[in-house]
Length: 421
Ligand SMILES: Nc1nc2c(ncn2[C@@H]2O[C@H](COP(=O)(O)OP(=O)(O)OP(=O)(O)O)[C@@H](O)[C@H]2O)c(=O)[nH]1
Ligand SMILES: [Mg+2]
Image (cartoon, rainbow, N blue to C red; front, side, top):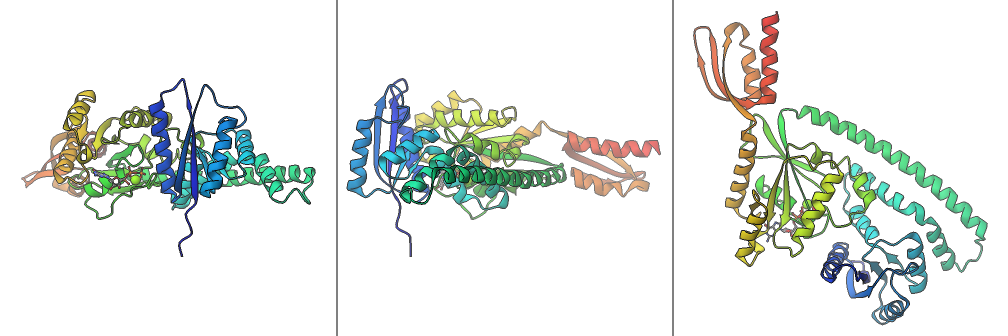
């Protein structure tokens, strides 16, 4: 039997120094985040203020209003569209007599739900534990209240908090060791892939990265209309590329105000983005918040040290854009960008063509004559180059081929070896 959906009230503060539209968009995004966790959003409330209330973020009047809605609509969860300090969280839970989640906690819950591999699970757990550490006091207060304070003297609570802190720190240390090992293993894999070009899909959550990857590599699987559907990176070979092969990797999406701890703990997963030869920065062309999504992605890429990797901006979901002049505007605003729909074969062929063009400058065409005494080298040339023609002459095998500068260096070293010996 399905569990009944949790019913939530979303609460937001519009700071008067900032624009109202952004606050409204952020609240809509919070709703999508809640939906991703199968939470039913029953009510949305926003209050305009000059500055947040230091104790409860919203003002007293709003709190009373919210309390009434909670009672009338049988709400079991309040979600705040801001990050709350440990104290604010505590005061709010006390005032509303109800569980209060902030934006970061909601995102962490989604990440926790979607983490499948041991590495992704460990990364999310580290972020959750670090978020929890300063909030332990509040949690104990909550527990004491539920038990009516009976049997839990003040000293016991404090002792418990210290024990918990030590346990949490030990657990974080253990998880970090697991993550370091995973990163080391990935390093080994990375070395084995030296003969490939790495292309990574990156961008805001729900932009269509996973869909694009599956459509391009002609797989049946499709993306999900959920935020943070993908947490671990998956890699596929791109069709039509050989010597070297081109590997396409799908990665975790970004979001505005991505919890800082989360970015840090996903650093190792995101190393595929940092080490890529080319980034396909995918954005949802039909989203009214497109520019803010781009900005967020640029910022996170900078944070993880990937802002120097060449980037091809891919505006996806062009089929959902009703006004064709928007696509024209995007092309002039972002020169060199592409507008595509993941579901158009023609668009995807165009995308692959652009990727090919990008790497073309890394290729050289060469010819070599391999003496028969060294014919075992021929295999090596077939491994490392795209052989265009082969002819058997009197002195040896003549190959004409296309390869990358990197692979040519390996072949040059082979020839030097022969000259030395
Ligand atoms: N109409 C239309 N829908 C698309 C297109 N590309 C993706 N979608 C839909 O957009 C939703 C999100 O797609 P995903 O591929 O999961 O997005 P993502 O970027 O991988 O998202 P995260 O993994 O959460 O970062 C899905 O419902 C897709 O079917 C497109 O070109 N056109
Ligand atoms: Mg995805």
